[in-house]
Each structure stands twice: as C-alpha cells, then as structure tokens.
Image (cartoon, rainbow, N blue to C red; front, side):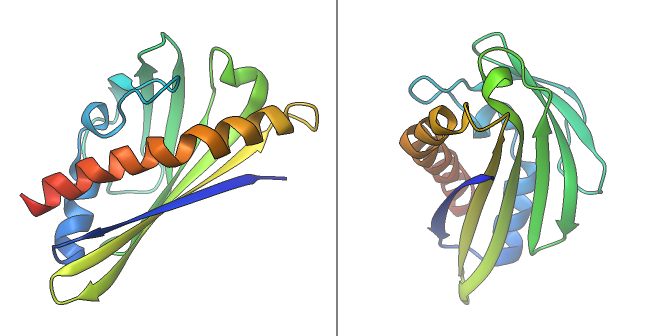
Length: 156
C-alpha cells in the first residue's frame, strides 16, 4: 500500500507562468538538503525543462546516493508526474518506487496554487512503518522548502 503525502503553495503569478517556472527550475536548486534528506547535486541525462513523456534523468544526491526519474504524465500548463526508481543507499531497502505529481490551479487572475503529492511504495510490510515515519516526519518540510523556491522564482 502506498504512503501518501501532499503539500500546497499559493503563488502570486499566473498559472501558465508558474507552470513554466516550475518545469524549468534546475533540479539542483529545487531539491536541497533538508534535515537528514539529501539534496540533488548533479543531474545526468535529461537536464532541460520537462516537456515529453518518457524523459529520464538520474539525480546524484548529496549523500552519495542516486535515483532515476522518468516523466510519466505531462499536460502543459496543468500537471506533470514522474516516477522515481533505482534508489541506492538506505532508501533502497525501504522503497521500491515513488511517484511525484504536481497540479496547478488558477486561484485568481494572477494567483496560482501548486499541489504536490508523493506516493511511496515500500519494499514490503516490514519496511512500511519505517518508511511511513520518515515520510510523515520529514517529507512535508522537504517539499515545502522546494515549493518556496518555486514561489520565489515565479514571483521575482
């Protein structure tokens, strides 16, 4: 059973602008170390804005681990989703895959909301409680800090 976590961020800019800024952000700037969770320090493969299903990239993380990411859904100006697999390091034992989904909603003429949801698939029932604890304790802040960087960039 997947473990789910969601965060939201309101941004004072049009939905189309926020979407463009979000898909264009350098992953190294977007995902930074947060508590015990690593940040992205290098990207191999597709290092441009997301734009087509099947685009893939490998993230090298600040704790010397890595993950692969593949774009699995993309509706320009509305939503995108990606699958994260091939975890190395401690997460490899806990997690078989994760899926991130970003949804963009117009809240007014120049206001947008991003809803970012992650679904984590544990490797089995024994690892599920450990993964649940890590996700519920650290992931909200990890994602909120990333969304604050999207907000800063989109509103500047």
